Image 1: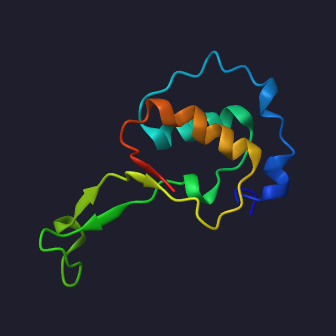
Image 2: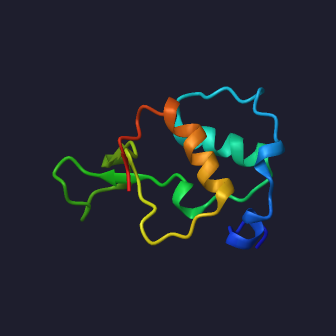
Length: 106
């Protein structure tokens, strides 16, 4: 249960004192998020966890094997109805400038 994000636990962490000089953005949003999460010593917010979206060529997942499905890149982050702590928000805005694949932030 130690990897579960909670607002209270993450909000206690002071991310302003962390030296960001070693952080070099890769341009891959979710990898950069995990790097900063480790640097800050916080838990990953559920909205910042990478998920995979798969679909078949025909557009329907019914009856298609896992190998026949095409993996698509995530291009939108959705924070709608999520409670955000300051540390997770800071991670998001430090990773967004170099992440060219993220097109929408809701």
